[in-house]
Image (cartoon, rainbow, N blue to C red; front, side, top):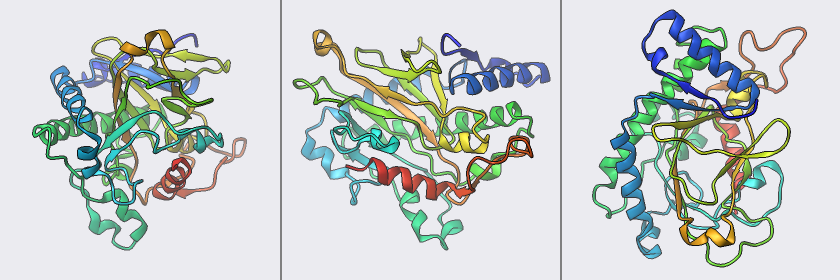
Length: 326
């Protein structure tokens, strides 16, 4: 594969067997070849995305002391504000590099069913309440609207994945009906001076869950994906496109048939720093905490035994989050 493919989702939403089959086939090829693809005509309104970017820009411009009022109490939970250099994604793949040059603001599930997980106290941090800043006043309403739109799209993409794997379209529904998906805004400010040796805006890593949907603006110092020939390729999206990639849990579900690909966010060249303010917003669809991640029907057999032991989604997530902590 020489590039990240663009897949038009309109035939899927058209609901004809031929249209759905065409989309599922294209997704399967992309997930085997590179683990990344872009989507067009995905039904996320442009106004919903632009409003979210505008309000999050205003939030990140607030004084650090004000943003700190919505920090998670333990400093690690995927809620609220996370300051610059408080995470290190490269550690999740065993690299010892300086922490990442990005800020984040997270929200998680809007209406989780906590009673279903009452017997698993370790799950509670992934289903805790969201924390909302006092300013900008419109942030809660705007960001909630984007979460709901991304959640709908993410669940539909899981149905595309199911068909692409030769399964019933609703195969994954029971594994994501109490998901702990997050929606972080990732802010990359204009660098102040030179980064330390090996320090990036976001270190090389694979994503942890089942899939990621990413919206981004374009500025120097952006997303790169490691291709099968071990080279790093710049990835951007045209207006109206979103970037999708699979995560570690989907790679395990497919018995490593599909690739959870390494990617990173690089620093801008010194000559372009002044115009390098950048932001992305990603929806990370993590299955239910107690969903079992193991090789799916048709992805393992006598000639291709399971490559990983079964594991609960939440347990795998806890391992990854602990590894990236600074």
